[in-house]
Length: 359
Image (cartoon, rainbow, N blue to C red; front, side, top):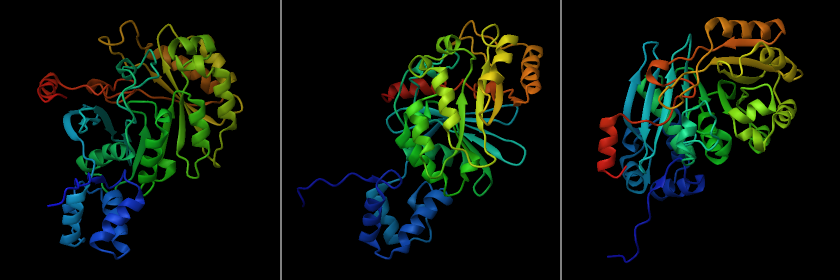
């Protein structure tokens, strides 16, 4: 009997490609086996090596003994009256994140989380109340995509993917870059959007990628003072510097930066704000998404959404200034699956079970 401890199984997506290649070759040296494995993982979204039926049994047994596929447990599922689905997914260390599927005309949009919390601390976002949490690996992010696609019967169907769930994607560049690489196997970069609160080093990193997803920026204010009060990140990377970075951001022909503006009654929804916004964005190819605030009285008391009339008036000022503007009345509000409402929550019964198991 060997005195050497058995090596820990490697994750078939998170492990370096060379390590996976060597693992496969140890059981079957034919080069095409690695391509078959990647096809199952990234295109057919296999959650277990036993699903990979065109791999020899001996290779499947070897992989099962020496490798893993990251598959979080679905610990909660909520379905909205509007068709939105929210999953709470628990990883092996007990961390829970939420991922959302929003059906649309022609294709479903999948909203993924990049961290288990968020260090940015925007005052209008429930996730920020969780604190920093930890970064998710590429395999952990991709596992959310797999879970939503398989659960909703979307394998092979066209989808949009947005990194707008829990966390600040540009504070987890390694995990997000790996997840993008996996997603690009089946989803066009034009159908993927990465949203940021304005992390300038992250914007420079994103600008340098050979294959770039769409960019969305959470702006939410028209003055530096106002933005710093709502978004502490603005104290480190001021509004003027952010706008300058957006003007430099490389865009392919026909693509625009999405500017997200959460409307908060009595805070950033005044006629003066509406007039200032077009001037701020002058010279930047943008489309503006106005998002009426999604209330959460339990966690964000005192913040309310403007009236529909005030929202329409704000949008009208932007349209009159020739900005491409859309009002996004968020879907999934009734299941706390809308913008700013994700917090990796567990139902009380599930929290009790997690506590019993040390989760």
